[in-house]
Amino acid sequence: MPTHPLSPDELLGSREIQFIDRQETNYPNLMRLCLDFDFCVLQLLHSTGVPTANTSFILATQDYRLTPTAAISPAFAQLDQLEAYVHLHQVDILHNYLFGFVEEDIASGGNPRE
Image 1 (cartoon, rainbow, N blue to C red):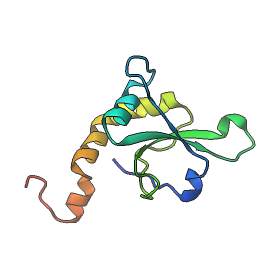
Image 2 (image 1 turned 180 degrees about the vertical axis):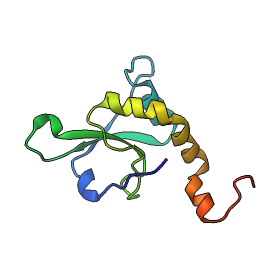
Image 3 (image 1 turned 45 degrees about the vertical axis):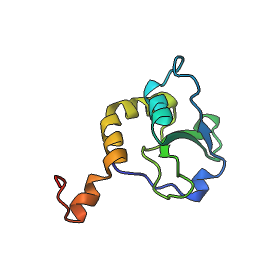
Image 4 (image 1 turned 180 degrees about the horizontal axis):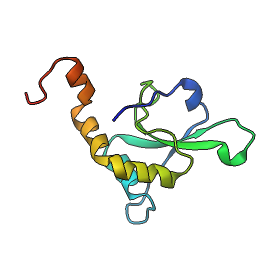
């Protein structure tokens, strides 16, 4: 699962979406990744003339302020779209989070079975 670089300009004015209650959530996959693992959902604000195009949502790691490639997902206009993306790619996202990126193992010549 590739990461998507975040620039400091994209983070300016962004905010974290908080998931408080496990019982009442419309986004169970996003909630699980944020509460059980080290992820967060960011709402990025854009300066465009169209009010509905001013925001986008991404899944990022908690160290998004320090790591330029902290975005795990591409940007989506709605949380429903991000939830659907996470639902489809949850296994890959968690595998990369727990075990690292496969591309790094292949590039370094390491044997993934070791």
